[in-house]
Length: 486
Image 1 (cartoon, helix red, strand yellow):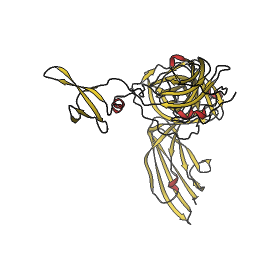
Image 2 (tube, one colour):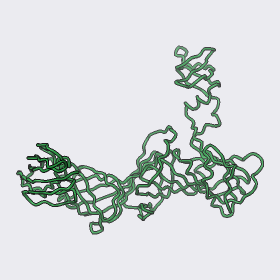
Image 3 (cartoon, rainbow, N blue to C red):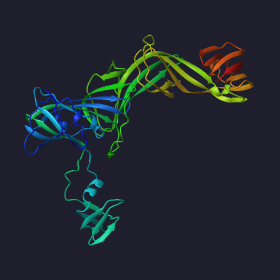
Image 4 (cartoon, rainbow, N blue to C red):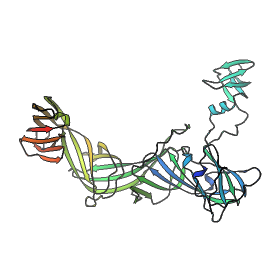
């Protein structure tokens, strides 16, 4: 068997050459006009949706079609309004069947009041205006002259604009559709065929949302992860096999889709309460398969549980951060009453009750107050995080811990080398002692010449001090650094 798509292949989108999965036997085309057939979601046997967290997805739609032996023009409805037609792949799964695609068109000239008026330019319509004195509507016949910049009509021999009333149309033009439709010109050797259509669509998206609840000691937390799905593709996928791909997939940027008007009402479905996804590797990405069918309705946001872990170890730290440019010239007072950042880190390891690939998303932190009510602490975005890596979350800034940083001296030694002395004062207004990391991202080729307390070399461009600050007290540290930066 072989696919025969030759000079006959043509059409508005000229994509029939991509449909390489058809089972074909070459035979002369049928004589006579094509028989028209339609298919909608009522013919659907199964649908599978794979959603990527880059606002697109893959739809695989399997249907049982009622055709006719010979040439058929098939209108395939209930596809995504944001379909990429050039990605469509159509093939028959009926064993031994002849099924040849001659032409494909994607029709998206949708029925709207503006489009209806546009199609009636040069034709007559009925117009109705309410007569307040008579208490009835007056009906007149009008010719539609133009719809550019507003509707222009000829009524009773007079050209008028800004008509205040309603319009009546005799019928709907045949080339206006109520929904986007794929139309194929086919050759089939039987009256029924089971086919599978696969395509890419925009405006299917998912993200991960995480809830981290800290305990009283800020050293343990319960972590719950949720998949939040958003379907704005323009159609619904009922009882679908759902898969999610996490990873950064390279794509050629598609052109902007044709604008389609929708009712923007949003439905939200109650979240499920336990993890239901099976995770596996896929190429250099991760695939999450929902282990039951689900429905993705158009303009719906749905949440499904991804993970749940209790008593996960967390580390809270306070960080007083510097800037590399502090080590490039003379500045004097660098920071005064600077807020100290609050961070939480988590090891994504089995030892720490995790150890699974975590899709990128937003982590929101909560903690119970003395009455037991949960209070929101802050949130941060995470990237795709493999197992056995660390999550670093910026929660916010400490209220009761502040600091000053002063450049006490700066000397330029040559064109690319400088030397400076610095002083940091940290003040703690809490009733308990705190530990603060003083982070110094120097950059370049650096050396700490003098220091009032031990420091740690973090990496080639950074060192830090781990400073204890007493309750309702202050701590000063000083250091001198020489740096070559070019």
